Image 1 (spheres, rainbow, N blue to C red):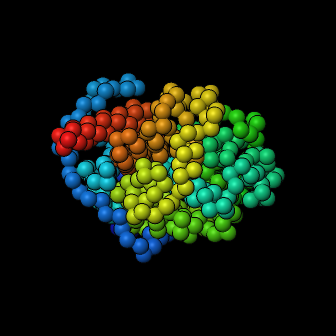
Image 2 (cartoon, one colour):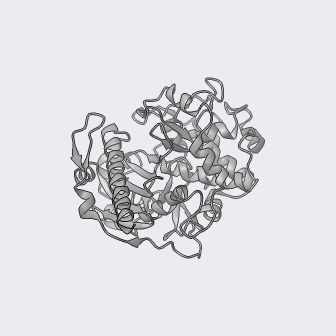
Image 3 (cartoon, rainbow, N blue to C red):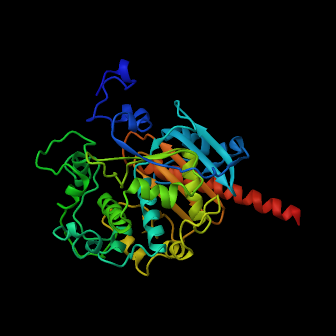
Length: 408
């Protein structure tokens, strides 16, 4: 990488270490400055206005019950302790909290990591609702190039719910895990294995099956990468243009998004999208409002929303017996979205290093947090943040109920 004096790069940052703790706050907000990206255009439509009704001081002091080895803390203490780059809360369409740190602003674009998966899942949902994508069809019906891979026999539904039988390790701390080899293949990391394919699609064709398709849930980033490939093939359109047309230009986004690409321009679907904090709230509102955006555009069909919320008959069982350490008793994973509790009231879009969109349907709350945790996964930071958003949602819902009682 070029000299810091010429480019603004932090001294010593390079392709090998940009995901290490000391560089994350900068690198997550400057992806386009050192890796290839493509624009996901917001189009020319109206921006969904988020009416500011600041309640920050009242929310800051809310007490949050401890979980996963934590101690009782306030919302403010949790945000300060979890490497927060920015966080915001939308309640009934009103922006009640918004805060940035370390130089990040409302106009900053931040790497979403695996929150990207939910965006790709929404594109699949829009294609399904438009009759372009059959989620019960075989993956190879759309991408014949995968017929010789472990994905032969898997369905699009298996991808959406991460229930294929593919062998793929998501151990971020293991440099030889498939999730890290994928980064080598797309040039997000130095190439240590010269035998690896040099494109995303080339790498996906090397993956093999370890168990039957349609079994237990296992979190695997490759599932979303194959899903993105399927969406492109079904629509005959590259993902940046496809996502712009079906999603980003219709949610009232304030800014263009971007997606990291491999050496031939294919998007890094599982974790490469970059966007602003407020636009995360606008996207999350689609799931709060039964598939309709804040600009009153129908993005996802009522049927897609219903099947996302309900899950399949065995979704929670498949989640229970997952080999991963999910720590969400009674939860499930459906259509690239996490459900952390036994019911379907709360939805989560999650990315490593602390990226989150939180949707609480009964409380009418959408919240978002962008972070730069030193480690990819940190249960204490994750569940503390979830607890903070739960506590704020409960307080906001109680205030609304009280005001309605007074009005009557």
